[in-house]
Length: 236
Image 1 (cartoon, one colour):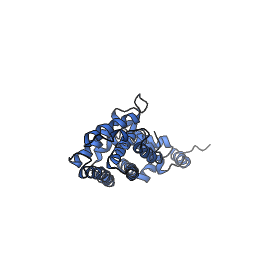
Image 2 (cartoon, helix red, strand yellow):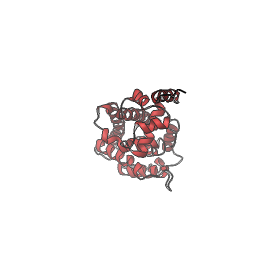
Image 3 (cartoon, rainbow, N blue to C red):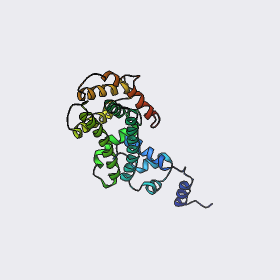
Image 4 (cartoon, helix red, strand yellow):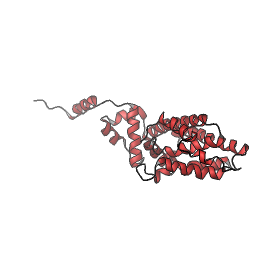
């Protein structure tokens, strides 16, 4: 009897492995980063999970950093598109800002795995050449928020202030949610979204008139946010 060599067996195993698409690799990678962090994620574990070789992952994405950048670009493209769609559905400047704040908080249930993965690790790659496209998308997202703040100030709806700082404060507050919010906990994501909208809009608006409408469960703002999110990302 001829014993099959180890190398031949390995080649046969790889050839018979279930093929995996770029999307499957990307999804598995994001989940590993969300659960274990970037440093705790490796191609070997992902390859074992998907039944492919590490070489297949390298073939598709090259390095771990490049895979992270690729995944983040897709995430930001979707989130920016959602934000633009929400803004287009709402007329009043305060509604548009409330809609974006509501959406920022709902990312903890709509696409939570991706949200956690990127919000916990994005700072470490902020200046990396591989993240150039991601930076451009984040800047475009920030500029969208700034433009709404500037419009609200120029029309006398919002108090005067530095829109750049205010935009960063809004992002900072909502994007830190992943460290304390539990989707299975006693507080719903909607409850938290309402609190953020009240906190931010009460501080910005010259008049309190109309604030209740911004958090109305049956109101225009919440409806617009859910129409967009339900048409895109699936709740985690």
